[in-house]
Image (cartoon, rainbow, N blue to C red):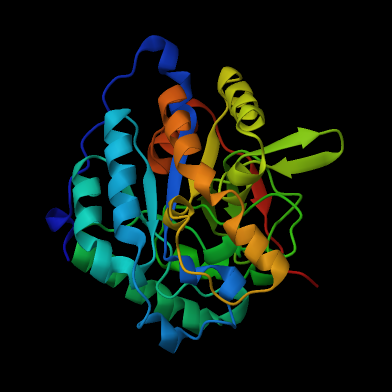
Length: 313
């Protein structure tokens, strides 16, 4: 598809003066079904996914309505496997000024892929998004934030694919992902070959020697809303950029239960019934923009630091 056929994203309206700094906060949505979660990897075969009921569409429609009602914009990191069901909704969101980005094709953790397999996954995802939504994604997020030192090879593949920015590095310690020494604000991430890509990490907060995750998802459901709001408000007052992320299935407390261990199921289902009211309150109390728009503002104000993601020995 030629770039001339892609959907034109309208410019963001000028916000009130007091809200200008708030627009440094990016809201992102990982568009995937409940059964794509990493907690079900190895428990739900890919062949079974085609027989499972799709539940993303009504969640995306509700979210689109709330974003419009609160004059907020978001970035949707789209998994190509969802497009048959939600392509029309995403086209509407793109026309309304939201950003459509890439989450891959099949939601495979990067550690289970080879460079050739990732190239194929990205090609399929980009082709499907362009075909179904009419946009060429500028940003990418790896499933499960799985760009780590163990998968540093993936950076060269992402750069080769032509992305402008990545949002896959979570600067924390975690059992499934994380680069704990990475910067906590947007930075240039340096690949093994020396090429760079802009990186936009999720929100974290420092507590003494600890760096705690606050970016969204399960952390939004784990922390009391008042604590989450205080952390985000402090970031906004400081004029610093922040990235939040959510999944449509977090708006769906009645989703079917799938086989998983006790801890995995607890992580997946924790406080699901609180997500909609909490998120609606967040949308009313803060102002959000797309990842691309926030990055453009930050890069216009100052040069970004560099960070080399070296592979594990």
